[in-house]
Length: 345
Image 1 (cartoon, rainbow, N blue to C red):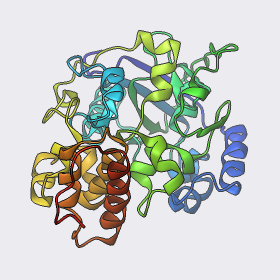
Image 2: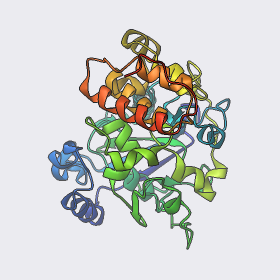
Image 3: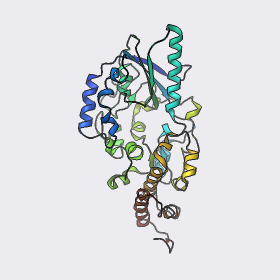
Image 4: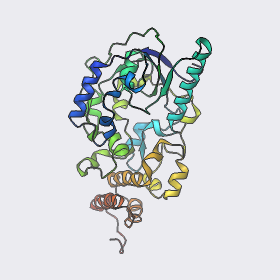
């Protein structure tokens, strides 16, 4: 489409069954430290409580996979590289997708006159996958993300809550069948059952949402994934139909598709803020960026370069960073065959 969406659908507001699953997930504590998931209560599953007067939700998807990004499997296989989820290699998607939804609403308004609407994209308590699946954009895969036969899962979702009594689209049936390739592909075993993800074990949660220390037992399993994780998507047969983005904003910036862990680890806070301005990565801050990279360096093949980079951060003002650096140095030294500097602590 002209606005950059590859598909648009319309869903109703009855999410009762999804609400029951959400509440059970929260009771089990699988949201981890994402307290906002519980604080929003049932607004997430009751659109009319989030936006009074809502009758229908227009859903849309937009491809994000940068066509020029280095092959994900190659980066994951190179322990000295930093793997960053492919959705985060370019600029932050929130403003772009919301702006396009706003334009969509304005076009509708020109045709039918003023109507009530609000645009969202991962920016409010909205059950995006549930609404998208009910509007026919795809189905919920066993890894809990939306899947499309035409586009895999490499896309952003956005919604327009409206008071228009539009005809709803038919939901799509699941096409996962007996396939469960996504489950064993998860490095930390976060997909505890089909359609059930325990965020506390999910690498995306651990590297993005978690504010404190990453659990020691999970650190070796994270490998070189320093911002998010795409493994379950890479394992999914439907993702071979993934579409490359046409949006210049989602193109790779600063070589983040193929950057060395040690090179990123030496960025100062000023460099981090400047280079990642407008990037979703900037939201985690320099401290957690270093925490994640330290874990990656601790899992990297032993090298003098990795040890030297880690040693430079041993006196970092953040206790969080220092603890992860010390852990990483222990792992590097345990497998090193080269001489450590005499003044190394």
